[in-house]
Image (cartoon, rainbow, N blue to C red; front, side, top):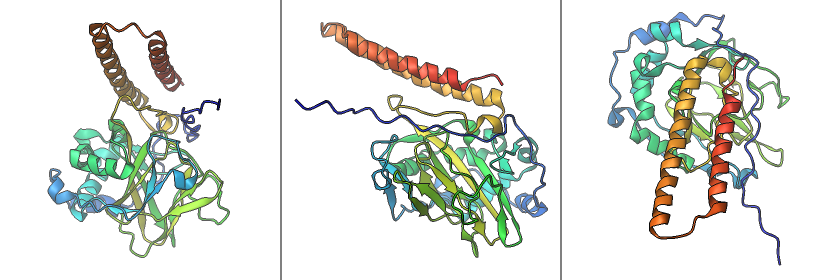
Length: 344
């Protein structure tokens, strides 16, 4: 008799975060032109008919193609760049990112990135927040990801990575040069959240490089073309080792990264806080993380309770192995939270 196949998916990889342990402001000032340009934009409310211009990607690379079949929560690994926002939308987002209130409250720096904007929230960035929470945008990101997703937590709407030109190259913090070609901007890493959608907020005319490099299961390196202004790349970054490559030319490279998790409470959620704990206000981060995890647990309990009541009505016997398995899954879910919510 043949042996039973192990249908359990492999565990999610270990995430290594920045050495930064607590919220730190950047020491390098932003160019004044970013602020001046933002002040010229008249604020608008988000309108999907005006501000979205979705065009499906020409290609979506699967997990199987990079040797990671059965890893992660979706068969889709990463997309080619695809158009998602109009020019008017990008102007509105940039206006919020470089507003006085956001620059006062939401600037962060780490050993991975010198200058980031994070945790803008709906009050300081209503357009950006409304866009990423719109059913129209969420459905398109989910379509490309191959699974129904929702934004992870409000603090991750959105993370803006800001790099300003220095000579003929974009000035991005670098830990090492794993490719050995002088073009690595950030070391190989896994993301803290299941999926990310990376949108380019800069005009990339005359810019070269800026690709995303993926490491396949065989150790080979695959490069995905970087997005142009208003276009995006969707990546299952929690399960794929990857890095951003330097962009050459152009006066700036500003990208917006929004994190996503599965909508269904029944799909495993292997989110960790390792990569974001040191670049967030911890009270806000822990509150939002705890809230959504409790919501998942609440939905699971309600669903299980309903199933139990239906079992009793059908006069079926109590299933001890099934109940123990379910309880163990919830125990692991809570234990994972204990591992993430820590005092420094």
